[in-house]
Image (cartoon, rainbow, N blue to C red; front, side, top):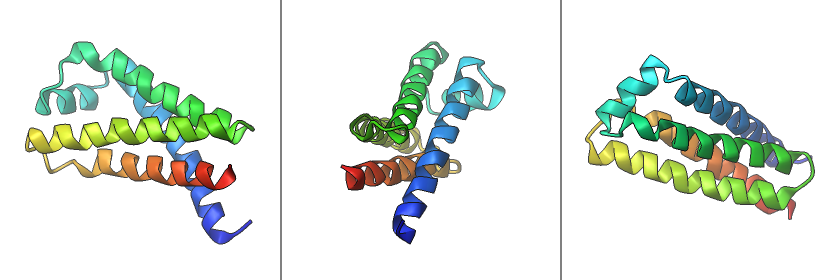
Length: 120
C-alpha cells in the first residue's frame, strides 16, 4: 500500500470515529454541543437530526471500509456537504475561535472521499 493511501485510510478511520463520537455527543446533548449550537444560532431541537446525519456518514464510511467503496464515497461526499454547512454557520455567526473543529471534520471527510474515489 502506498504511503498516501495509508494516510488516507488512517484519515478515513479517524473520520468514522470522530463522527461517531460527535453524533453521540449530539444525541446526549453534551454541554459543549449545546453551548456551540447556541453560539452559531442553531436550535437545540435540530441536534438529533444533525446527529443522525453524522452517524449515517460514519456508518457509510465504515461499510465502505468493509467492502462497499461506492457507499463510502457517497458517505464522504455527504459529510463534505454537511461540514461545509457547519463552517458556513460558524462564519455567518462570526464564531471563529472554534471554527477549526468543523474545519478538521471537513478535511477528514475530504480525505475519506479521496480514499474511496481511489478505490473505485
